[in-house]
Image (tube, rainbow, N blue to C red):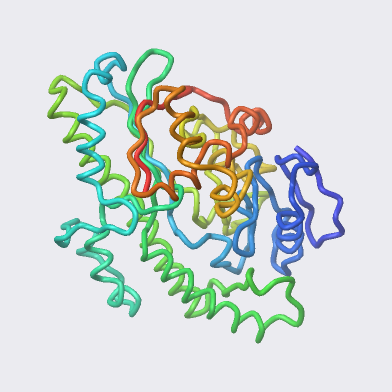
Length: 388
């Protein structure tokens, strides 16, 4: 861990090597550390890169304020993983059939379910205007993957056990909440702070009416994202059950990496914003995926207070999406996956190129940088990938 030397309101602790950080990320973390309400210090995870206002992989703690862009646009985005008793050798006998069935059963990209889905969560919708506006999306996007870096992986561990993994979030709901309350936060911050480092980090007072509204929406979006991942996992399980009736599902882990949570740190109750970072309390299970076609890590946390009990959420982008499409093509993607014997199902060539392995940092380097935050319990190797 490095302590960055910028003259800021609170210190900056970084698990990313400062020599590897681009200027945009450095500027954003300095702005974060200069927020008038930043508590104790800010932290930067090993996979950090530029985001909206706050770096992906940034951690901000605050006593009295919530920052919508420090939670992120895809509120509640995260991972679910489950281990099975199925062996990889068995899975390979049905891999292509299963891949096609998953790809045609789980809507990906901009696709939704044709019929409104039923879920117990819909019986307790918050009575707030944005919910009414998003109601159709809420009910047709439950159990959908989305695009970007969202994916479904089927992998195996060192004991040849098959794992299922899904990465997705709150879909259009989270985006709408983030956009609406960021605009309100800009208005509030202009009115209530004499100086402010960056409009993109605009805040709402937690105890204000708008702050309480945002908190209600944010918590609902987190629940929606959790159940969205779980619903996709149910679909995948039904498909695999039809091929392997003897399969058993064992440990399941379902976690967020875009959220804010009220926690105690350094003797104070504070709102910890994790944007592109997971909670890593002592012995807490975590999921740190690699890039498309590389291995992923199932971890246990150490509860390191310097990171606000957090760790990275992945390997982190090395280059942006536009640059990836300029540098690489589908032949690069297909050649890389073929060499690793990974079967790909995709919504578009462009999406696959954006998520090409060489667009991301090396996952082993990222894990090494945070060995004081988490320990790897299982290393998972992909056999099948679905992306939006």
